[in-house]
Amino acid sequence: MEAIINQEAIYRVARMNRVVAPGDPDARQLYEAARAGDMGGVMSALQRSPTIDIDAAHSEKPDFTPPFETALHAAVRGNHADVVAGLIALGANVNADSDIRLGLALLSPLHVAVMDRDSQKLPISMELLCLLLDSGADVNRKYHFGFDNGPLCNLVLERVDMVDRTNGIQVPNQANLDAIDLFISHGHDVNMPGSLWHFFDVTSEWINYVVELGYDDPDVRIGMLSGLGHANGLCRGQKSEFQTQDELKEGADRILAGSDREEMVWRMPKVLFAAVEKGYRGLVEFWLDERWRDWGIDINASEEHSRQTAMHKAAASYRNTRDVADFLLGRGVDGDATDSTGCTPLLCCQNGGCSGAEFAKLLLKHGADVKARDKAGNNALHRCVNSQPVVPKQPAIVVTLLAAGADPDAKNDVGDTPLHVAIKLAPPPGWTDASAYSTV
Picture: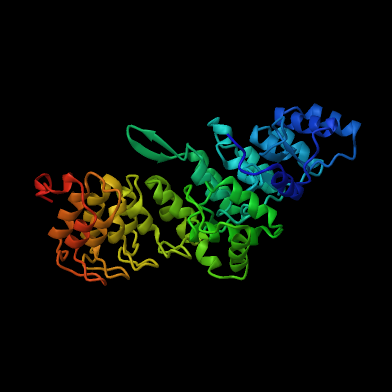
């Protein structure tokens, strides 16, 4: 795959970590030994060259391209606890940055320790976590550019073994629950906000240009990237409205001046939201039943920008989150909370794939307002027929809403009823025959 950043960009980012030149054999031996779990090789390299920067970042690729990482990251990634302990004892920075995402997101060793390293499906190592945390690893450290909620959110999002599935029943993986307890005991803020850059598929020319602008402040750079990417169609392979260097520079300066910058940075879900979106009822139940009072989790917390709550996330998820929602509603989550667009969870059900009708029934059973409207005057019927692409069982949501008293003649702010909206969108033939959905 063609690199998305050029060599100049690589070296610009690499300077943050003092990347070692490929021609330094002793430094390279130290890194390779740490990566292989060979503490003897680490010591041998240090004995030959005592001035080696133990925190320098290396590339594991022969062409010296990303990802970069320190020897400590490599040892953690390989689950080599003895080498990790040795490197820390020799003065390795336990909070060093690692560039393992093509120069755009820098992880600490603790982030790496909780991830499913190299898709090896290795179980999480409590020994490694204890070693890092007891050595001063920052449990609340975010990605260098502020992309996520810290190592604990990485654990929820990245690991494939968060739950054990036996006979179709999801049971939280005890080792991962122990890791969560360990993080909390070391002061993890479970409600810490963060942000996520959604524009990873922008063109290489755009990435190169932004780096060449010379802005060294990573926070400014990411605000600029996500701002222009969102405003001018630079994501999803679309072309920018800006065609010349001067126009691009003008747009970048506008972002740097603070114009709508925060509006362009999407907010990452809190740790609880990540588990809700994936339908991990066992994990959500563990947190809210056994830990929420001690940890201070706000069950009705909302994202800073979207103002969506856990119920909004569950309603819009394409995974089967009905059981999670049932549990949340039983614990007092507000089923009629509104997000920044005025939508309640019921108005988000049209995004919920084939489970949307069942989810809507659950919300209505718990008293959701079927007449609720968003800020554009749309009710749940408007939003249901307006969703694209239309999923196979969406007519079932319409029948459910109508049976609950949704007004099919309600007009939104532009005077359209749900029928007007449906006709304008030229619905597929499957919508013309609702006989299969005649009962609720």
